[in-house]
Image 1 (tube, rainbow, N blue to C red):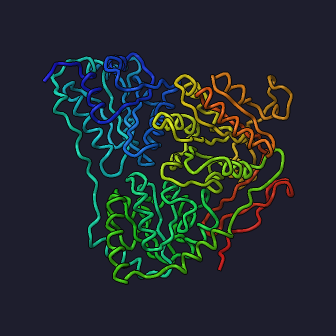
Image 2: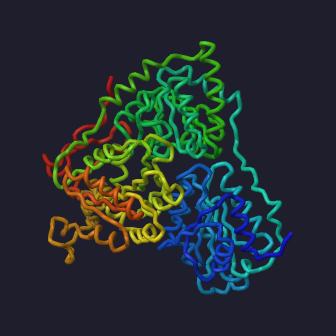
Length: 594
């Protein structure tokens, strides 16, 4: 046993739990913790420009690699409330991050002290656990429980709030005997696996829906092996995109109202038995539940018991870690195939491939200003299979999911359920901090980019290079498209005559993103015409290699483009070419190919 400050014990625990990087902003009430970080020198710290940005950096860090847990740190009061959005985002997407906040002294907690707020109560609904530590001796064990809680069952975030006097108090603690607690993860039984496989084997047109739980379990290889043994096509959810490569013969496309493929929706509608693994049946995946479930049998596997039946009651529910379930499914399927008991679905799989070959949306447009579809076409040409895409919300993200290609797990890093504007930029920085080598391409609309644009300075200061593609139509594009239902276009335009612009075509687009990015210490390139893309991507790569800073590539889009979406998966509206109609006109609902 050794005497030490509680914060020194906390930092030792962080080391033992595998933490080697943290994101945050120091302040008076958390300075003791920072003094412990400085004294040890074992954990890299990246100074954010906004505390919300630090929370999203922590998210990106966690999402980038299996086993990572991002840490974000802030002082008392508004630092904690600023990080609530990151905690909500992490909770919604089953992402473990640890938020550490400073707090007023214990004796002042009910005195309305400066920046004293009950952050644990505020954070409670968007965390797995939120606690203000009132006894110094509890500090190392609260952190031990925090990591155990984050890793057990459905992963998620934890907030630990430390009053300043608790941080400074001396305690007895023996780090040499410390060990992380083994996380709890439920596992499917052999009987459950056999029942699920029997239901699948009774199907004529079975389908696997692969969710983000497979990514969390680091079980994508098991998924692909299971799909190949059975021959059953796979529809990944948005959070599960990359669990099976886009060009795999059994990858049948994504389903949903927005971030989906025409062929993915068509295949889901044609299926008769659906095996969902590690997914939530999120509303933008299912659309109208009655349409989604009609005449179909469902098996649902999820690590969280209360997800089974939350959206609709499956015919069979299995509470299990996705990896544990897939291992059993694979064992049973292999035995049955060897014994000749497994059904042959090669004809059904070929039907799915036929839809995938033919139900494609147009991307090759030569218009100036650019149509967004052409941007994604050029990105597919320019970026390799190892590219990691980071995005959050808006028409830019929806179109990206419709047109880009992802080939590996954790190469589509997306804030799926919460979708806060501004998330993309700090999350990309967190991904880069976690992985110094992977090609990283962030994708934002102009408004998402503007929300936390100040975090570019973090990338410049800490040498965190990545490419940020900004598709600029100077509009809140998704909201403008939604306002069509109200016959209005109200308070969604970002355009204004920028008095500092050089007089070129972008003057009326308002914010000069190139100038702002360069002012924050980064490099930037503007693309106006389709023939400029190849050179621009090459220049961007050279600038990142030379300067080790983020590079912004801004694409000037036509002001109005409607992206395919709809109110139900059998009624997704496609749109004709804007150049012919002035305002995109709806042309067709999704049609099945026989």
